[in-house]
Image (cartoon, rainbow, N blue to C red; front, side, top):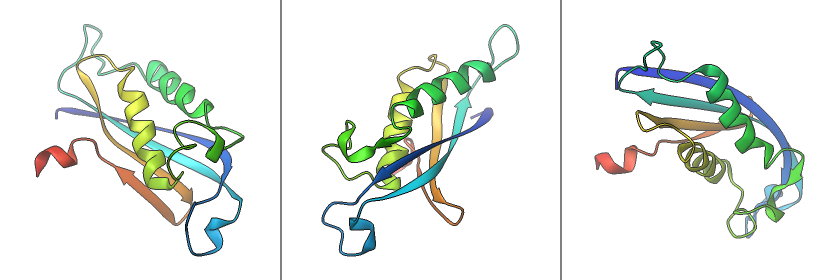
Length: 128
């Protein structure tokens, strides 16, 4: 990896964790902060890995699906637990679908509070 871009956005939503034995099984909400790291091996003709305007638009569109919603009723969280881990993975996969070939998702971190976050790295499973 030669270049890494960092984009941050946020969304607010409610959820509850199914089959969880604790207070998070009850309905509650978070103001999630999402850190997106993109990697690129090269630059385009303008000297950019990816225009920040385009990167912010892509992340914003993905997060807009979840903003001010009850996540347990929004696909794919209507079928899977809306944990920070799953949110990070779902965001990574949705962003990946919209990137040019030379750019890939390095990681997505979903912060559910100032002190608790989960990171998903698509490439990590391929290294093992």
